[in-house]
Image 1 (spheres, rainbow, N blue to C red):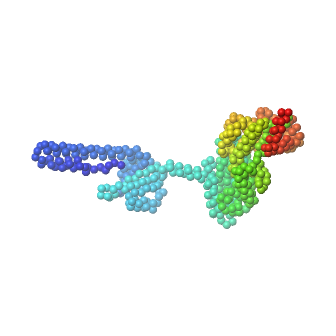
Image 2 (image 1 turned 120 degrees about the vertical axis):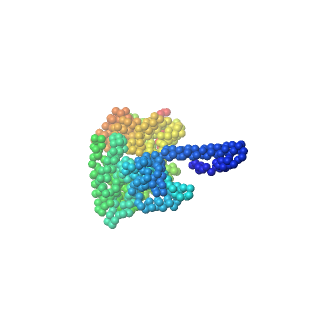
Image 3 (image 1 turned 90 degrees about the vertical axis):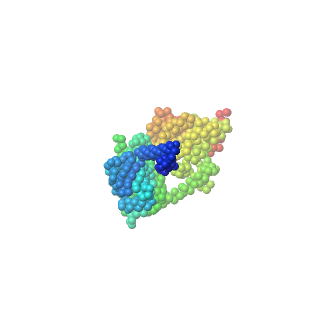
Length: 611
C-alpha cells in the first residue's frame, strides 16, 4: 500500500559525500557549499522518516477502525499484537492474550489432522485461508473466516505471522435461515414439499422386507372461511396446532405441510391396515380445536396411497396422492379416497381432453357460447341472459361443461377459457347493439383462477372499451367457493372497484356452499342466484319451500334481487311469484340457445314493440 521505506536516496548519498569532503576542501566557499548539501540531504532523510512515521500511524489507525480482527504472532507462534476488533470479537485484550499461543482460542471442533494440514500449507506456501471455529473468552463458540500470511525479514526468513479474521456468525445464521426456508415450512416448522420429497425418497430406499409406506394427503375443508371468521392470526395458530396434533398422532412417521391447508403424512409399517390408519387420522383430527375460546371441529378431505404397491418413485407417489385427493374432493367435502389404477386411467383421459381443449381454445372453432335468458316473473319479459360455454368435439360430439370445466380449473386453463368467454359475450353485445336490437345484460361466470391469475379487471375494462359496450350490460357471477378461496386474497375491494366501473355482481348457486351472512353484508353484491337444488321439488318439499322463502325474505331485507334457477313448471313459477321472487331462469321460459336463435327472439321483441 505504501512505498517501501529506505534512506538509499541520491540526496542522502550526496550529503554523506559532501560531509566527507568538507574537511579537506581548501576554500571556505566550497566548504559552505558542501555543508549546504549536507543540510539538504539531512532534511530529505528527516522528511522520509517523518513520512514513514505518519504512514505507520495511519496503518495503526486503519487497523483500529477495521471490523476484521488482526493477530500477529512471532515464529514461536506467540501472540505479540492484536487490534481492537480482535478484542471486540474474542473478548480478550492485548494484555490478557500477549505471549499466549493462539490455540487458547480453539473451540475443540478441529482435530489434529486439521492443524497439521494448516501448518503444512502455511509453511510451504506462506499463506493459508479457510473457515475456523474458535471460542470466545466467555465460552461461546463462533465461526470465523481466517487468512494467515507469513512475514519474512530482509534475509528471507519468517519472522512473524499475520492473521486477519472475520466473524461470520451472522452469515452462518443467515445460511441456516435460508436452509430452513428451503426445507422447512416457516409457520409450522414442519418439512415443506421439497424436504418431504427427499424424506420420502430416503424412506423408500431403506424399506426392508415386509415393510411398506402409508401416505396421506390431508386438506382442511373451507379453511378460507375459517380464516376469515377467526382472523389470520388465529388461522395460523390453527394450522400450527393441526400440524402438532398430526405429528403427535404419527410418532416415528413424517408429517409435513405442502402449503396452504394441505398436510402430508408418511408412515413406515409392517401392517396391512391402510384404511384403518386413515380412519384413525380422521378421527383424531376431527376432535375439536380450542381457538380463541371457540371450539372448532374441522372437516377433512383425504387422499391416500401405499408404497410399494402404488409405486416406488417419489414423483409418481406425489402425483397419485394428488389424484386421490382430487378424486375425493370431486365427491364433496369430508371424504377420503385411496388411489386406484382407474384414477390413473381417468387422469390420462383427462389429460387428453385437456390437451384437445387447449387446441380448441387456440382455434376457437369448436367452442360456442349458448345463452339462457332470464325473465321477469310478473310479465315474462326478458331481463337478462347467462352465457354458457359449449364444446362441440369433432369426434366425441358435445362434451358437457361439467366434464371439462373442472379440468380447466385444475390445470390452470380457466383464466384463458374464461377470458375467451368474456371476449365472445362482449363482442356479441356489440353486434346486437350495432343491429339496433334492444339488448339485455349478459352474465358470465368467473372462476377463482381468473381472480388469482392474470389481470381480470384490466381485461374486463379494456374489452368493454374496445367494443364500446356499457359496463352495465355485463354481469359477473361468482360461486360461493370462489368467494372463500384464500388464494384470491381480499376479494371485497376488487369487486367494489368493478362495481364502481358499472359491472353487476351476483353470487351463483347460492345456498350450496358456505353461505355466510357476513359475506352478504360485506361484499358488493347485486343479486343472488338461488340454486336449482332448492327449486326442483317446489312446492311439495317443505324443507325446500322453507329455505327458498327464507332466502327471498333475507334478500328483500338486504335490498338484493334474487334469480331462481331451474324453474321448469308452472307450480314452481307460481310459488316463487307468491313469495316475492322477481326473476327466474329455467326451461319453463327458455333452454340455452345459440346466439342466432337468441337474436331472432330479440328481433321479434323489437317488431312486436313497433306494432
